[in-house]
Length: 102
Image (cartoon, rainbow, N blue to C red; front, side):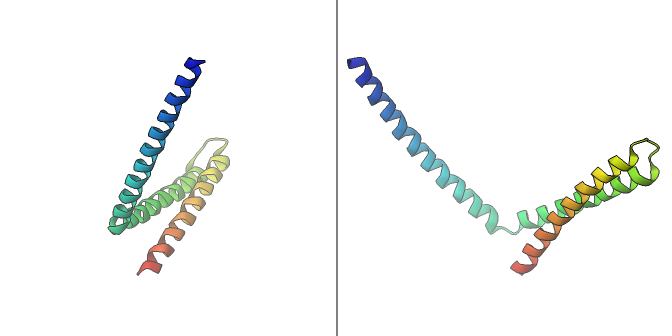
């Protein structure tokens, strides 16, 4: 019986330590996010990145559909076009968010 009580005490101490460290971690993470959002740079970087990736995907789609000699060039072009649509949608959302802030 004493061994069981010792384990319960040890697990309770571990639980309190884990809760304290997770609280500290969440507080530090929230502070980091606020600092990153306060500067204007991350928003413009993500906007530029999504624009460049969407343009690259559109270029891949066109090159696969029109310039490839592979038998599955329509399939590959369609997949690239689907990726391009998703990235273009992401770019549109980010652009709208930036325009609302200004």
